[in-house]
Amino acid sequence: MKKISIVIFAALFAISCNEKKEGPSATNDLFLDNLKGAVQQTMETPYQTDSTGKIGVMDSCCISLGNYDSAGNFNKYVSKDGKGNIKFEQSISRYDNSLFKEITNSANSKQSGRITIQLDKEGKKYATAIEYDSSGKLSSFYKDITQNEYNQLTSMKQYKPDSTLKQSEETKYDKQIFVEQTTKDSSGKEISKTSAKVDDKGNQIESTRTSTMKDAKTKKDSTTTKITKYKYDSFDDKGNWTQRTEMDEKGKPTKIVKREITYYKK
Image 1 (cartoon, one colour):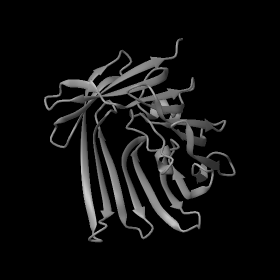
Image 2 (tube, one colour):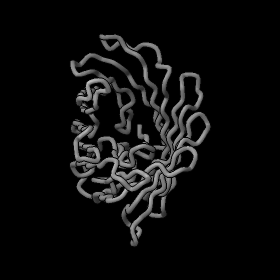
Image 3 (spheres, one colour):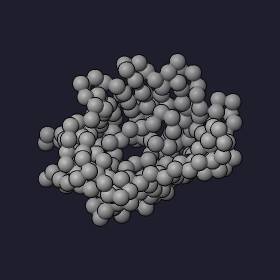
Image 4 (cartoon, one colour):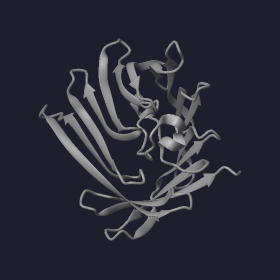
């Protein structure tokens, strides 16, 4: 499920792993999200599981819904708790050429922040982005943005309101398929790295995230690595997965996610 971060602009383009194609002829979000057919909505519901992989009760948080317009572009994300209460909502507007224009986030029915994106003079590439907090105050801005032929972000720099560098980010793809993302702090030190592996159908089968943080007491850097593996249990007649099991590094099941997909009617 795609959720666009209001904190890190790069998440606009950190597309989940995708189906391989030779050219950018069909670069709407369905293609980039490895979804086949005229998808209107996806709904992902997480369930607890025991060590053998047997499905248990539904997790209290959170059911995720993602909506796509008739052109195949992602335009809304909603997160609900087990009782159906909306905890988080995200709306997306676009320019006429389908590039992102504004992303607005709301938490518990109150706006929690937004990002506005500006294009270059030709209107074909992302130039800058400005991030605002819940009060409408500038919280950061982004420059030196580069992207690939699929309009996925390949690098960017994030600045504080006083124009000092906060962090930089670089993302690598195999064609349009996400491979690796590295974040560095203002001094150029790596603070996080995420990488992914996919199967021959473009479905993610493993993700690795390494984070480095400074210990508050010792003042020394501490690095943690988390590996998550994925197994696909069922697919619909379009070839989209409908149930997925998440596992830890040793292959022990930790979660089962069921996905319901609604398609536009012909």
